[in-house]
Amino acid sequence: MAVLAKSDLPLYTISIAAKLAGASVHTLRLYENEGLIIPFKKVSKQRLYSNLDIERLKRIRSMIKEERLGIEGIRRMMAVIPCWAIVKCTSKDRKSCRSFNNMSKPCWMANAKLNHCEGRICRECEVYKGFSNCNNIKINLKKLIVPLN
Image (cartoon, rainbow, N blue to C red; front, side):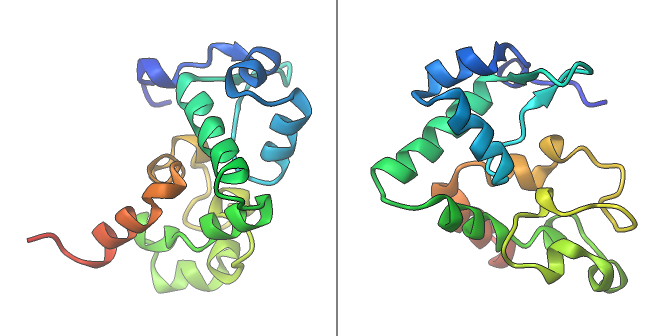
């Protein structure tokens, strides 16, 4: 298991996280079901959220309230992140990868069994973490596609 940065330590229960993010508990569960956030889960299934999760939730809330994006739009925007290029999948891996072949859900919602990501913890993956801010998706894509001079 990777060592977590202070900002990524699971600190808050779902009710506290909801208050900090300006949302309801139901809304946080909805975001989780829609693949917008992956909370920590204890063995007891209790959800816990980090400071980074709270920031992610606030950005999602902002995109919905201020930028008028819907949950479906945010999820589809995350679905086009080329995870296969970031985690260096082979062409063989991509043929059987549900994420590569499905453009409606982000890779962390795909069942990662029997592909390159099997055994990975999605919330610790560079794809999930690096593209957590939808406002930075274009910047991150440029870094991936256009070599910096």
